[in-house]
Length: 212
Image (tube, rainbow, N blue to C red; front, side, top):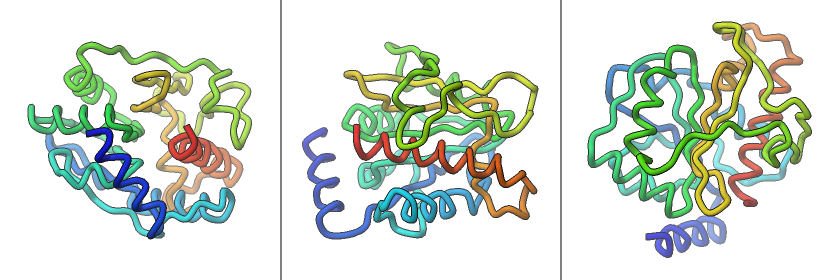
């Protein structure tokens, strides 16, 4: 499976711009939240990191073989998330084969998504990334770790990860809501300073995905 995934990635890198994807899931949560966030992040990365990402992201379901076509898949929303046994297996295989899943709590996702992460990786635990982790150092420096964007419950912003063979394969950003700040400015009226921090952090995530 990993060999097949690598072949797909080589083909994409060689012949066309690579494409990011938004994960569509069941359970009732609004997987479609923040519709402008990924396109804006892609634009920022193409302009500032010289990436060659397609300007529009795909939408992919958790049980689809198409999942393996995307090096980066993003999950967000406010409500319930439920993965079937087939979806759990497909997501696990995708990440163990080299794929990367970024879960961004849009507020209210935490109590549901942690259960699903445990279903996908019963043999692994989410670990909190320290502020000196490489994810927070390149290309932009975040000496204090994950930036706090939205107040939500007023808790510190935290980044949790599932790590396999020394590489993050699942990143869960909690109590920050990067995706809201990636949206068009008039959607949430975030201060430009916070939006810039969120874009820089997003760029660090994309940089990690393609260079680790």
